[in-house]
Amino acid sequence: MPSTPVIAWYRNDLRIADHAPLAAAARRDAPVIAVFVLDENPVNPWPAGGASRWWLHHSLASLADDVERIGGRLVIRRGDSVAVLGEIADTHAAGALYFERRYEPFERELEERVHEALADRLEVRRFSGRLLNEPGRISNASGEPYRVFTPFSKACLRLPEPAAPKPAPRRLAPPPPDVESIDLADLGLLPTRHDWAEGLRETWRPGAAGAREALETFLDEALCDYHERRDRPGRRGTSRLSPHLAFGEISPLQAWHAVRERQAADSAATRGGDALLREILWREFCHHLLFHWPAFPERPFNDAFARFPWHDDEDAFERWTRGETGYPLVDAGMRELWRTGWMHNRARMVTASFLVKHLLVDWRKGQRWFWDTLVDADLANNACNWQWVAGCGADAAPYFRIFNPVLQGRKFDPEGDYTRRWVPELSALPDRHLQAPFDAPANVLTAANFRLGRNYPHPAVEHGFARRRALDALSRAKSERRN
DNA sequence: TGAAATGTTGGGGCG
DNA sequence: ACGCCCCAACATTTC
Image 1: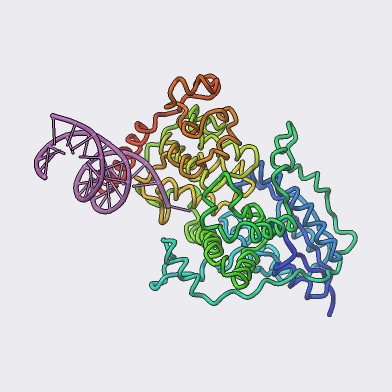
Image 2: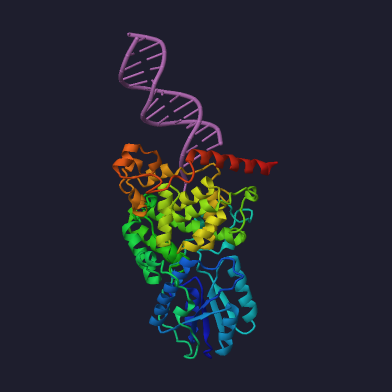
């Protein structure tokens, strides 16, 4: 068989194990041109944000090592994906192009363009892997896509247990030596003007090895109590796999299978394991929604919100982004995000609810901010969860569910570990008053040498007032729809 | 994967 | 002893 090279096109699937395109390429017993193309097409409405770019840089470095370890070489390029892939294909007479599917509208369209441009010259094949199930495969009794999570997840769980993930190819035939590549550093993914990435470096280890390490740590230390402890942001109770999943350093199948294995070995892991699998299914559900409603990141799923009078309050929005709202749990979350590129899920719900319901700022502004600052930024999850919080999404929190940031703080950070870690100026306050310094008696504040308005801001808005205002505005939006 | 308002119950203080 | 009130504590409903 003539060994014309095969191109393995990498995008958000930066791993070598359980990677169908790479495995198929290796099986061809031909030179493998593994290539990542940084495509900064201005038409893409969702180019990677700063935190994602930082992660991408390090993840590519790790992938390059992994590819080399099995005898290959990762080619790095920048430019228009169609043009670059076409040029590589022509220059090296490639016989095939393999890649893993994505589900974002822009990426789906890109896949179509790649197919159209190249399919007459070589074999273009796309593979599944980013999800456990193709979005088109899951539908309800009447053939419609599910709009509610619970029946969706039940349908997923009724399917046969997925097959075990495949190991990495043992060996790749290297690409022709003259395949052009540029230095990773020349992609310009790292911050230039000032180095804001220190907190990211301290917190994360991007790459498949880091993903595997995070998974093992989670399985050993947190899985059994996951269903309870994941709600406490002050403890290490969550998997912290989200950025690794977002960049495909670990596949959802690998995570799923590892949890199932642990459950089989240890009955104490049953409940925690099921809770984690449920989160993986939420991820599937979000992608399923984005697949069937491509406008999800731009438009409220529920029409009643189409003309909601959001407040264009730039000042309040900026206070929120900086973690200076005057509500300790909200500020803790926002500062954790800025520093580490990640935020505990409980805090995500509370901070997002605060922006949308207390400040009445458009959820799309919050979505954008998260998109730029999260290392786990994923279009489907981000859009789906913001709409969920705002109350306009599929299977969303009802409009009258408004988090009280003070009560949430007392309930989920009772000892104040999380709040004090990220808002250290509150450290000296006793637990009792930590979440509401504005309600603390004067003698308590004096004893802590604390003055509201000097050490820490006054609340951006009073909770009782904000709550009534949101209920009023949201219920009106609902009834106007009916008329 | 809420919170607040409202309703109910039961113990204890008190006249 | 009794009724009355207060108010936790808990349950229900309402937003």
